[in-house]
Amino acid sequence: MNEKKVVVVIVEGPSDEMAIGGILKEFFSSEEVQFAVVHGDITSDYKTTVENVVSKMDALIKPIMIRYGYEWKDFVRIIHIADMDGVFTKDCIKQSEVNTIQYYEDHIEYSDTESVKKRNMHKSEILFKLYTTGKIHNTPYRLYFNSCNLEHVLYNDLKDFSNDEKEILSDEFAEKYEGKVLEFIDFISDKSVAVSGTYRETWKYIQKDKNSLQRHSNMHLIFKGEEK
Image (cartoon, rainbow, N blue to C red):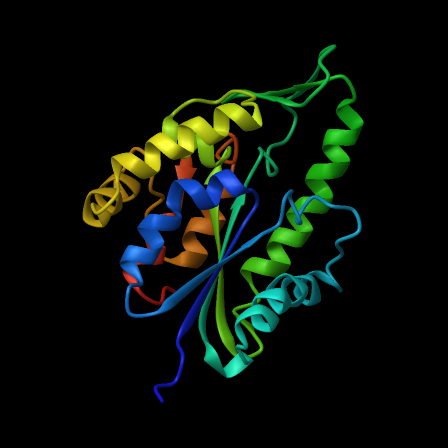
C-alpha cells in the first residue's frame, strides 16, 4: 500500500474553500487535499494566544485525521490562508457610526476605534508567531495572506460582503477557473496582486505602511515550491 500524502488547507470560511478548493485539488492532484474551515478568524480571536495558537492548528487538523484515519506522518504540507484586515496599519482608524468594521484602501472606519487598535495588536502578534513557525508536528507549515481579504484579492472589490454574496462570487470564481489551474496561477502571480520576493520578504512588505489594507497576496508562493 502506498504511503498517503496529504495536503491540509486551513481557511477562514466555506466560501474560501469554494473559491479555491478546486484549483488546489487540481494543482496537488497527486496528493489528497483536505480543508479545515475555521468559520471565523482564529488570528483575531482573543482566546487565541501566542502560546496556544499552534495547538489550535492541531485542533483544526485532528478531526480530519480522525475522519480519514490519517497519522501525522501522512501530512506533507499545511497551507494556512488568512485575511489581513488592515492589521498592520497605524494612525488610520477613523471613528464612524457603523455596525461592522469598514475597510478602505487608505483607512478603517468603526464606531469603537480602540477595539480595532486592540484587535490589530493582538492579531499581529498571532500572525508573527504563525508565519515564523515553519513546521507543525514536523510537517512544513506556511501562512499565506490576502489583503485586505480574499474577496479583495480575487474579485478586486473591497466591501462588506454578506455570506450569500460571498457564496455567489466564490461559486462564479471556481467555475471560471475550473480545469484552468495555470490561468489561476497567472492571475494570482500578476504584479497587480502578487508581492514579490521570498516568503519572509512578502511578510515584511505586508507589515509596512498601509499595505495590509491594499490589494496584495503571497498566495502565488503556494505554487512555487518551498519558499524561505
